[in-house]
Picture 1 (cartoon, helix red, strand yellow):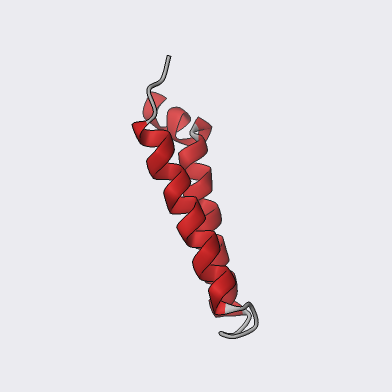
Picture 2: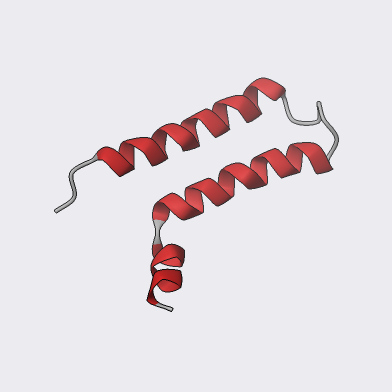
Length: 59
């Protein structure tokens, strides 16, 4: 149960969820409703943030 609580407290988890929501919104609203470049940039930014936060030394 502690791991699930830690998962929901994780910023990386929520950034990943936000990236998936952007992709799903593009699919549900119809491809092309949201500019494909914007979707790509949001997903790349989220992935970069997750990787950067993962390799950062924590105190």
